[in-house]
Amino acid sequence: MWSSLEEHWWLLRAAERAKWKLNYTGGRYTPEGAQQDTFWPCTFNLSKVIMGAGMMAIPRAFNLLGLLPGLAIMALMACLTFFTLAGLVSATAATQAGGSYGALVRKTVGGAAEYSLQLAVLANCYVMNV
Figure 1 (cartoon, rainbow, N blue to C red):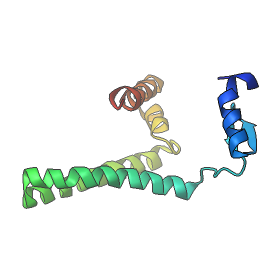
Figure 2 (tube, rainbow, N blue to C red; figure 1 turned 135 degrees about the vertical axis):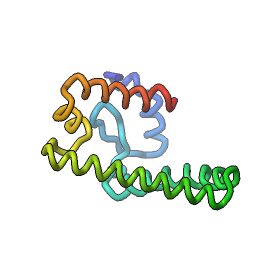
Figure 3 (cartoon, rainbow, N blue to C red; figure 1 turned 120 degrees about the vertical axis):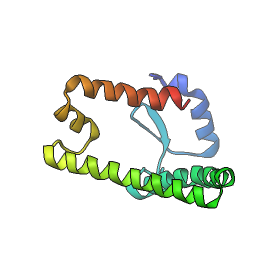
């Protein structure tokens, strides 16, 4: 990241024009009084993103499949999601692996599998979704 004030000239000029009071924290400038991320705003933002994708995908899926097959597949996906999460929760409780999926994989399969899991998540997030 940038290390000197001279490299932030554009932000400092904008701050002067806007009469901001800037704080330098964590390697970046933020306006004083900026909203900090908390649980509820982050939760609602994530819900908005998930529902936004569903609002676009579900009507198209129902249009392609029809009403009854669309409802059947939606119910099947809900059941698969439920049983997958129930299995993860029961496996975590049985092994006392802690609160993460990686800890469960490490406890049941080993450290190399956890490393492979982390690489798969990284590939999914940063390679396939870009």
